[in-house]
Image 1 (tube, helix red, strand yellow):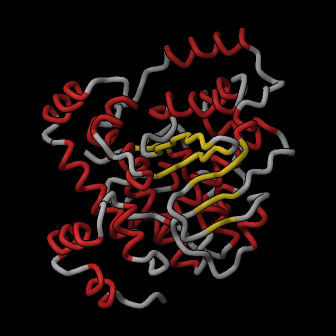
Image 2 (tube, rainbow, N blue to C red; image 1 turned 180 degrees about the horizontal axis):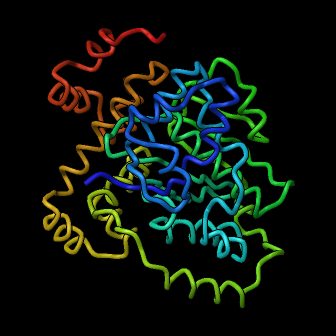
Length: 335
């Protein structure tokens, strides 16, 4: 069964299409969506269809910032009822933890991880589609929405160090400069935002702990949509952890509040092993990094968790039928 996301994920789609003189009807029909389906923000739609719609719309309009343009006018209320809880969290860190806790009410395919690095913090974010294919538009939409969420809670003074993308830069940076009040870095090892550690702990003057408790009871009482499978959850964790060199079963189990045996049992019940999930994510990320020629083969191997170029080459040859250098040589030139 394919994953479902809130139709609110595609809010502002029609406005952006109109700005770009794009007729959305044929594109919607091609992916199995309609205006009616997108009219209710709480309606669940196939995630794969949403991702494909974004990519096809960017291609048809000739606009490689289609997803980011959609994020540009996002409001806190677009997070649905969870927004009532977010606005009363004491700090941005608490708000991010709340977003992660209730992502089943927002977008189950989003993976968020807060990495503390002393004086700075990296807020990593991935959009993990069922297809495994990387989606430039989905990532930029997600990071744009995350950036705006942080801005709503911290106010106009917030200015992170950078917003980072694993894909290459667009032909024109005008939209990125307009949306992000900080440098946009491309061809990086992760998708996410780098900011001061103090930003995450800055007191939220709008927070009301009594109201937060009240809204929390309200949110907890909501009927939950069908939750993602344990295999999807593990894949999301691995997308974040692998480039960090932490893609181990111990790390995933710990992050999910369970022991290794419990995680293994739940994966077995779902018909998968941890090794299979690990190899699936590694294959997805290998394509992402290999298709971007800005990553050296040595860097690709390191990001995929291999300790030596030779072990990476053996694995890659087994999965793709060619050595990494030969595979990249045969890759169609960009454009």
